Amino acid sequence: MVFILATQTNGPALGWETAGQFLYILLLVAFVAVLAYFSTKLLAMSRGGKFRSTKRNLEVIESIGVGAQSVVQIVRAGEKFYLIGVTKESVSLLAELDAETLDIDERSGGLPEKAFSNILKRFIKDKPEQPKEEGDERDA
Image 1 (cartoon, rainbow, N blue to C red):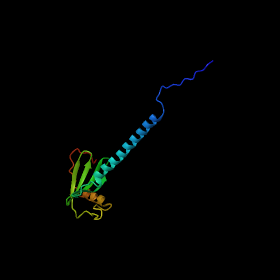
Image 2 (cartoon, rainbow, N blue to C red):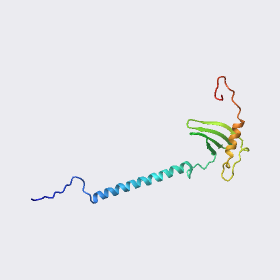
Image 3 (cartoon, rainbow, N blue to C red):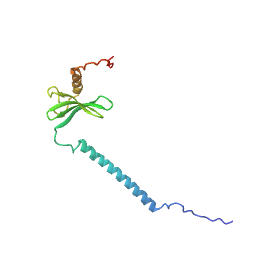
Image 4 (spheres, one colour):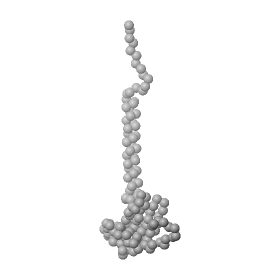
Protein backbone atom coordinates (compact mmCIF):
# COMPACT_ATOMS: atom_id res chain seq x y z
CA MET A 1 0.00 0.00 0.00
CA VAL A 2 1.15 3.40 -0.84
CA PHE A 3 0.30 6.34 1.32
CA ILE A 4 0.24 9.73 -0.22
CA LEU A 5 0.90 12.72 1.99
CA ALA A 6 -1.25 15.62 1.02
CA THR A 7 -0.95 19.12 2.39
CA GLN A 8 -3.99 21.29 2.67
CA THR A 9 -3.78 25.00 1.98
CA ASN A 10 -7.33 26.07 2.77
CA GLY A 11 -6.43 29.09 4.96
CA PRO A 12 -3.90 31.86 4.65
CA ALA A 13 -0.29 30.92 5.04
CA LEU A 14 1.20 31.89 8.37
CA GLY A 15 4.31 33.70 7.34
CA TRP A 16 5.85 37.15 7.19
CA GLU A 17 2.78 38.67 5.55
CA THR A 18 0.51 37.68 8.45
CA ALA A 19 3.05 38.84 11.03
CA GLY A 20 3.29 42.19 9.24
CA GLN A 21 -0.49 42.60 9.29
CA PHE A 22 -0.59 41.74 12.99
CA LEU A 23 2.15 44.29 13.74
CA TYR A 24 0.31 46.92 11.68
CA ILE A 25 -2.94 46.35 13.63
CA LEU A 26 -1.06 46.44 16.93
CA LEU A 27 0.60 49.77 16.06
CA LEU A 28 -2.73 51.18 14.88
CA VAL A 29 -4.42 50.28 18.18
CA ALA A 30 -1.52 51.82 20.14
CA PHE A 31 -1.77 55.01 18.06
CA VAL A 32 -5.52 55.30 18.73
CA ALA A 33 -4.94 54.75 22.47
CA VAL A 34 -2.27 57.48 22.60
CA LEU A 35 -4.49 59.83 20.60
CA ALA A 36 -7.42 59.21 22.99
CA TYR A 37 -5.19 59.82 26.02
CA PHE A 38 -3.89 63.17 24.78
CA SER A 39 -7.30 64.34 23.58
CA THR A 40 -8.80 63.73 27.03
CA LYS A 41 -5.91 65.62 28.62
CA LEU A 42 -6.51 68.53 26.24
CA LEU A 43 -10.21 68.50 27.03
CA ALA A 44 -9.51 68.48 30.76
CA MET A 45 -7.14 71.44 30.45
CA SER A 46 -9.66 73.42 28.43
CA ARG A 47 -12.28 72.94 31.15
CA GLY A 48 -10.15 73.91 34.12
CA GLY A 49 -6.47 73.86 33.42
CA LYS A 50 -4.12 76.03 31.39
CA PHE A 51 -6.77 77.09 28.88
CA ARG A 52 -9.06 78.56 31.55
CA SER A 53 -9.97 82.20 31.09
CA THR A 54 -7.58 84.62 32.77
CA LYS A 55 -10.46 86.93 33.62
CA ARG A 56 -11.69 86.12 37.08
CA ASN A 57 -15.13 87.75 37.05
CA LEU A 58 -17.08 84.57 37.62
CA GLU A 59 -16.03 81.89 40.10
CA VAL A 60 -17.61 79.03 42.01
CA ILE A 61 -16.39 79.54 45.55
CA GLU A 62 -17.79 76.39 47.07
CA SER A 63 -20.41 73.75 46.38
CA ILE A 64 -22.08 70.92 48.23
CA GLY A 65 -24.29 68.13 46.95
CA VAL A 66 -27.71 68.04 48.59
CA GLY A 67 -29.25 65.22 46.58
CA ALA A 68 -28.63 62.72 43.85
CA GLN A 69 -28.58 65.36 41.11
CA SER A 70 -28.69 68.68 42.97
CA VAL A 71 -26.01 71.01 44.26
CA VAL A 72 -26.02 74.23 46.28
CA GLN A 73 -23.19 76.62 45.37
CA ILE A 74 -21.74 79.92 46.46
CA VAL A 75 -20.82 81.86 43.32
CA ARG A 76 -18.90 85.11 43.00
CA ALA A 77 -19.90 87.35 40.09
CA GLY A 78 -17.73 90.46 40.10
CA GLU A 79 -17.83 91.71 43.68
CA LYS A 80 -21.16 90.09 44.62
CA PHE A 81 -21.80 86.65 46.05
CA TYR A 82 -24.84 84.49 45.36
CA LEU A 83 -26.22 81.27 46.79
CA ILE A 84 -27.64 79.20 43.93
CA GLY A 85 -29.28 75.81 43.61
CA VAL A 86 -28.33 73.70 40.60
CA THR A 87 -30.29 70.68 39.41
CA LYS A 88 -30.33 68.68 36.22
CA GLU A 89 -33.11 70.85 34.79
CA SER A 90 -32.54 74.32 36.27
CA VAL A 91 -30.45 76.84 38.16
CA SER A 92 -32.22 78.87 40.85
CA LEU A 93 -31.08 81.94 42.76
CA LEU A 94 -31.58 81.20 46.45
CA ALA A 95 -30.11 84.35 48.00
CA GLU A 96 -27.64 87.19 47.53
CA LEU A 97 -24.95 86.98 50.19
CA ASP A 98 -23.05 89.81 51.84
CA ALA A 99 -19.29 89.66 51.33
CA GLU A 100 -18.81 90.64 55.00
CA THR A 101 -20.65 87.54 56.24
CA LEU A 102 -18.46 85.20 54.20
CA ASP A 103 -15.19 84.00 55.64
CA ILE A 104 -13.10 83.88 52.46
CA ASP A 105 -9.65 82.31 52.58
CA GLU A 106 -7.40 84.81 50.77
CA ARG A 107 -4.76 82.20 49.90
CA SER A 108 -7.05 79.89 47.95
CA GLY A 109 -9.73 82.40 47.01
CA GLY A 110 -12.37 80.13 48.52
CA LEU A 111 -14.09 79.60 51.80
CA PRO A 112 -12.42 77.80 54.69
CA GLU A 113 -13.65 74.36 55.75
CA LYS A 114 -17.15 74.13 57.24
CA ALA A 115 -18.01 77.75 56.39
CA PHE A 116 -20.41 76.70 53.66
CA SER A 117 -22.54 74.58 55.97
CA ASN A 118 -22.75 77.47 58.45
CA ILE A 119 -23.91 79.85 55.71
CA LEU A 120 -26.47 77.34 54.49
CA LYS A 121 -27.81 76.86 58.03
CA ARG A 122 -28.10 80.62 58.46
CA PHE A 123 -29.95 80.92 55.16
CA ILE A 124 -32.40 78.16 56.08
CA LYS A 125 -32.94 79.62 59.55
CA ASP A 126 -33.58 83.16 58.23
CA LYS A 127 -35.85 82.04 55.40
CA PRO A 128 -39.45 83.11 56.12
CA GLU A 129 -41.97 80.32 56.41
CA GLN A 130 -44.40 80.04 53.58
CA PRO A 131 -48.06 80.19 54.58
CA LYS A 132 -49.84 76.85 54.66
CA GLU A 133 -52.67 76.37 52.30
CA GLU A 134 -55.84 74.66 53.41
CA GLY A 135 -55.67 70.96 52.70
CA ASP A 136 -51.84 70.98 52.61
CA GLU A 137 -50.80 67.75 54.32
CA ARG A 138 -47.02 67.95 53.82
CA ASP A 139 -46.28 68.71 57.48
CA ALA A 140 -49.02 66.52 58.95
